[in-house]
Image (cartoon, rainbow, N blue to C red):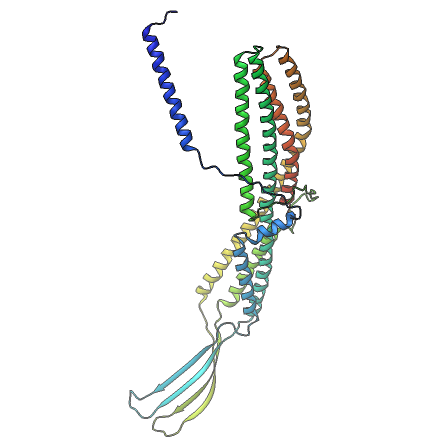
Length: 425
C-alpha cells in the first residue's frame, strides 16, 4: 500500500481533530464535575427497635396533623352531645313606644333568653355521632401507624439490599483489579496479546462504574430512611416471623378505619334526619309596659314556644348531601377491601417466587462457580481467551449476587407480607 503526502496530511488532520475532541471532552467533564461530598453511612443502633423507629416516624408523619384534627372534631361533637341545648342561646331585647306617633305615653320594654331545644331523638343522634367520630379517630391513628410501618419496613430492607449490592460490587472490583494486574504482568512478559490487557482493563473500569452506582443506590436508600424517620441511626436488620394469617381480617388497621368512616358517615345521616327540620326554641323573658294615656307600669313574665313547620325541600337537600357522603364512604370501603386483598395476594406471590428461586439460584451458583474455576484453568493453559473468561467471571458474579439478594429478599418479603395482613411491629 502506498501512502501519499496527501494521505499523511489527511491522517494528521484527523489526529488533530481527535486530539481536539478528547481535550474538549476532558474539559467538559472537568467543568461538569459536581462538588464532592462525603457519604456518611447510617450507624446501627443496637438499642433501637423497629417499633421504636416506627413510633418516631409516626410522630413526624405529615398525616398526623389530620389525625389530631379528627380527634379534636370528635371531642367537639361529644361535648355538643352532652349539652342540654341544641344550639347557642341568644338574648332578646325589645323596646316599643308611640313617641314617634301620637305620643300617648305607650312604652314597652322586653328582655328574654332564646333557648334552642333538641328535637325528639336529636340529642341521642348527636351523641352517637360523637362516639362514632371518637372510634374513627382512634382507627385513623392505627391506620396511619400501619402506613408508616410499611414505609419504615420498605426503607430498611431497601438499605439491606443496597448494602449487599455494594459489598458484592466491592468484591467484584477487587477481583477485576487482581485480574487486570495479572494480565498486565503477563502482557509485559509477552504471554498474552494486547487485546487481553485491554479486555482486563475494560473489565476493571466497568467494575469501578458498577461500584459507583451501588454507592449511589445505598445513598438514596439511606436518604429515604432519613426523610421518613428523621433519624441519623437505624435498627439492626432483624428477620420477622411470618404471620399465619392468609386473609384480610376485620382487625386490619386499614379495614377498621374504613369501617369506622362508614359508621361515622351513617351517623351523620341520622343527625341530619333528626335535626334538619327542627329549630324549636323556647323564649323566657320579662316585660315592662305602660299603656297609652296611663301613668303606671305593668311587669310580667312570659314564655314563648317557637315551632317551625314545612321546609321539606331544604331538609331533603341536607339529608341527600349527607347520604351522598355515606355512599362515598361505603364505596371507598369496598375499594379498600379489594386493594388490601390484592396487596396480600401480591405479597404472598412474591414470597412464593423467592422460595421457588432459592433452590434454583443456589444450584446455579454452584454450577457457574465450577465453570469459572474450569475457565481459569483453561485460560492459564491457553485453551480460551480472556474475553470468554471475563464472561464466566461476570456470570459467576451475577449468580452470587442473585443468591445473596434472594436471602435478603426473603426477609424483606416476609416483612411486607406481615405488613399486607396488618401486623404492626
